[in-house]
Image (tube, rainbow, N blue to C red; front, side, top):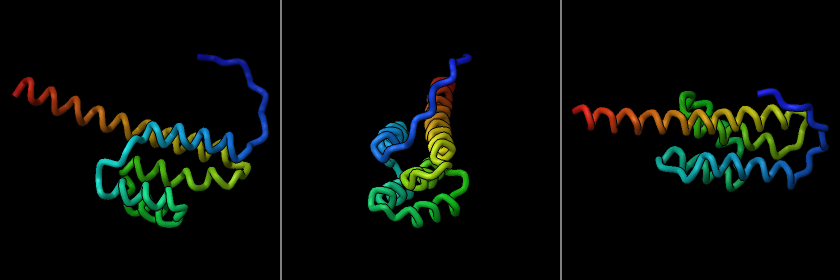
Length: 111
């Protein structure tokens, strides 16, 4: 889908926070101990802890998404990229979750 170019606007903390909130909504509530730890660290502003959890749980998209998000709040020239990577990881997290659920349902149905 091709979209018309949009005018680039300056970042504000409020606009970035809206984007962060949207990504957090997509991630949903933590369902594992690891995700709870990462979410708690993020909410407390301990972004170094979140990044450590992401770097030591490399295949975990929930942690990866949160690991990026702390950097978005700094309003740097990389904020667009950081938000995009966090959003992609959040989408990947949900994709994996749905595939796992569907696989279990198909297994149960065909059992």
